[in-house]
Length: 278
Image (cartoon, rainbow, N blue to C red; front, top):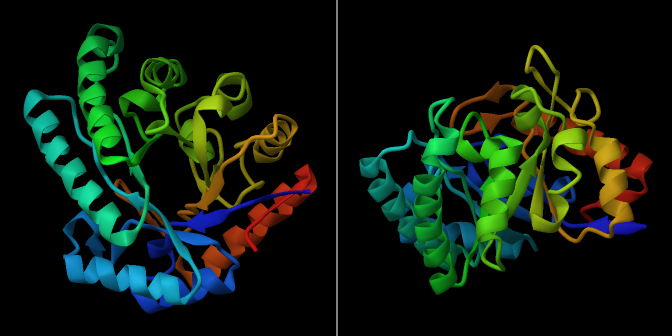
C-alpha cells in the first residue's frame, strides 16, 4: 500500500501555534504548512516568531512543508508585479528561517477574454519569480485558485509547459476547480500529475460551490487518487478543508472539523488503495 506524507494548513485549526501543532500531531500529520499564526500572515511574522514556529514543530516531530504565501493573489498590473516580487522575497526569507523548501504561490488575475492576449506578460511575470526561486534554491508551488490565471486548466498547462522545473511545480486543488466549473478527472488528470508536487485536499459541490469533506462533493477524489496510485505518483497531500469559513486569503475549520476532514480523506484514500500520514 502506498503511504503518502500528509500535511495541513494548520491555521484552519486555530490561530494559536500551540493548538495548531497539538492537533496536527494528534491527527497524524507529518508536517504543517504555515499560512498564519496568531492571525498574522506568514509574510508579516517577525524572524523571532518564525523561529518559534520552527522550534515548536521540530519539538513535535513535524516538518514545515511549505510557506503558504498569498504571492500573486492580485489583479494583473505593472505596479502589482513589483509588489509581488517583494512579497516573494519575504516568502523566501521566511522559508529559510522555517526550514521549508516550498512556497505556495498563485498567478495574477487577468480579465476574462484577455487570457490569450495577456499570456506574454503573465509569462514574463511568472518567469521573473521562477528565476528568483532557482537562485534561492526553493520550490514554488503554483496553486489553481479562484479566477486567477492559472486556475483554468489550459492556462495552468501552458504555465507548466513553459516553466516546470525542480524549482517550479504545481499544487492541485480539487475544490477550487469544481467551483470554477471544471472536472478534476476530465480537465486535469490527463496531464497534471507529472507537474504536481502537492495536492490540496478539499472537496466542493458543483453548482453551489459549497466546500465539504473529501468524498462528499464533486471533486472526484477517489477516482483521481486511484489514477495517481496507478501512475506511482510521488508527492504530498495537504489538508486545506475550509469547512467553516472559505475566505479570499484562507479558510477556517476549527479543531473538530479539521479532524473530520482528515478522517474523511483517509476513508477516501483507503478505498482507493493508499494511505496518508503516520
